[in-house]
Image (cartoon, rainbow, N blue to C red):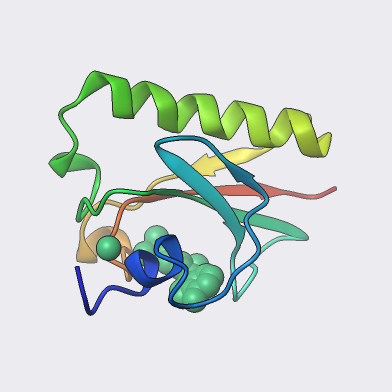
Length: 103
Ligand code: AMP
Ligand code: ZN
C-alpha cells in the first residue's frame, strides 16, 4: 500500500537496517523500544493484521523468522507480541510481531 510505512520500509523507499530477512518477512529494530531489545518481524506483503493472513505458509514463515532472528542474534529468552486491532493496541496496520528481550 502506497501510504503504509512498513510497505515503504519493505520496498526500501525508507532506509532501514534489516537484521534478518527471508522470502516472506524482514526484521528491523523498533523505533521506540519498550525493552532493551525490541524488534519487529514484518511481512513483506501488506496484510492489515493477523486476521488478514490465511496462507499457512506465510503464518509458518513468520514464526520461522521469529525463531531464526533470535537464534542468529543469540537471544535465548524473549516475549513475542502481536497486536490485532486498534482496541488491542495496534497502531501500524501492516502485520508485524514484536520481539522483546532484556539482553
Ligand atoms: P503496534 O502498536 O503493534 O502497531 O506497533 C507498532 C510499532 O511500530 C510501535 O512499537 C512503533 O514504535 C513502531 N514503529 C512505527 N514506525 C516505525 C518505523 N519507521 N521504524 C521502526 N519501528 C516503527
Ligand atoms: Zn503495508
